[in-house]
Image 1 (cartoon, each protein chain N blue to C red):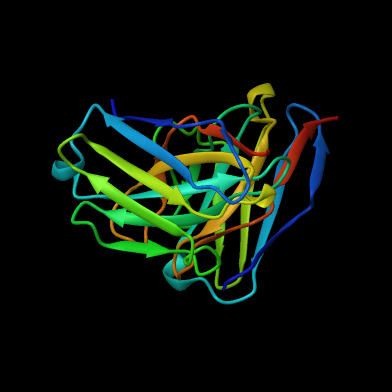
Image 2 (cartoon, rainbow over the protein chains, first blue to last red):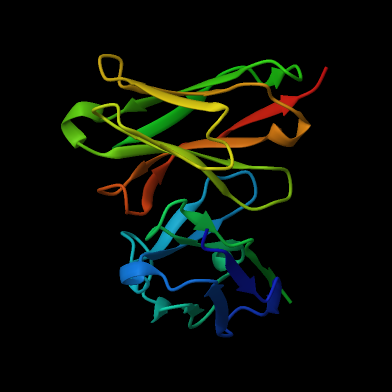
Length: 108
Length: 121
């Protein structure tokens, strides 16, 4: 299976700063079939990015995704208080679809 | 607006069978021609895909759980279900149902709120 490794495990930043989250796959992800989800405590994951770089409906343009092959990045240009959460990457180009272990974005 | 809601027992005894149902509202499972899936999240851990099903009944399971999992669909009730046999403490998790945005190789675009299942005697 395609193992996804996210880093850093925890990212401590202040509102207004830029966040860069990474996701590395053990095998190339087919057709950039990579998504990012945001999860807040007690809530279901919320789709942020799909197809490596397409924003989901309702996601503000401060969120952007990039990458291909085995290396992907989620960037948040200017952190707002509501952006602090856990972010998971997921590949859906091969079965079994797999998730990364998550990056916790916390307020510094 | 499409909504998914999981339901089922919150406590299951070891070696018994876990059964959950996902009820879909705001749309018809048949008319959407979508794939549907189950995902779980053990306490303090990441997400694990369990399996997916198409409205026709075609199923796809995670190899690590395949021997114990059955996913079924009832289009007349707009529901799909998860059955996991011979559960152990390792199956304790928050279980989510979700809709895939398109074909099997697509992302999850709509999630239920999740239901906590604890395996304990």
